[in-house]
Image 1 (cartoon, one colour):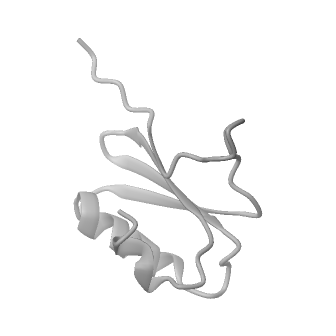
Image 2 (cartoon, rainbow, N blue to C red; image 1 turned 135 degrees about the vertical axis):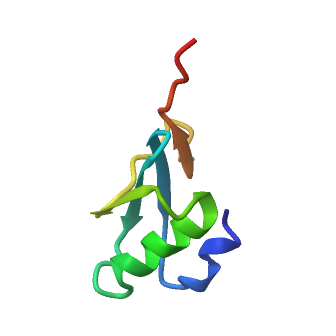
Length: 81
């Protein structure tokens, strides 16, 4: 996924969260106004499917784990068994 985001050279950090099968949230750190939200939405839709809903959240900082690292991709979607 890092390769896909290389074109956003001013993007410090991002986090893609899959909320359910059709809903994704993309957190972007400190790039408000540098790129359009629609451009990011199109990038995600090209990756996972054109019919998904993509919410964009602009944040000052993406929380890191105690190790200092952070997860670039989080899946909260659970398939019912």
